[in-house]
Image 1 (tube, rainbow, N blue to C red):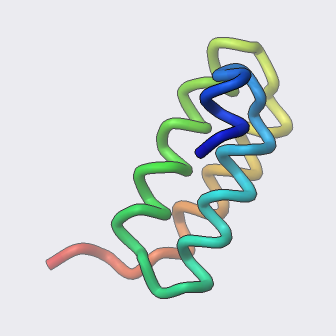
Image 2 (cartoon, rainbow, N blue to C red; image 1 turned 90 degrees about the vertical axis):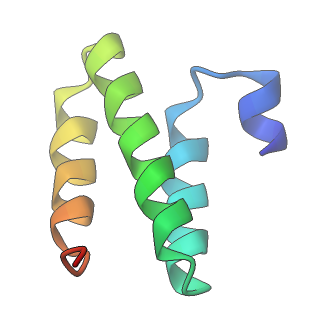
Length: 64
């Protein structure tokens, strides 16, 4: 939260925040944060990060 407020282009904050949400069982919040990070990675042209985030998203259970 606070890192993103200070620097909305700090990609690691989205990735690490999403992983924390996932570990806490907050899957909707984790998906949302990963998705926001994916959009940022695309905007920044960080293809390695895009690939990593996509892999993380693919590991989520499918929504009903």
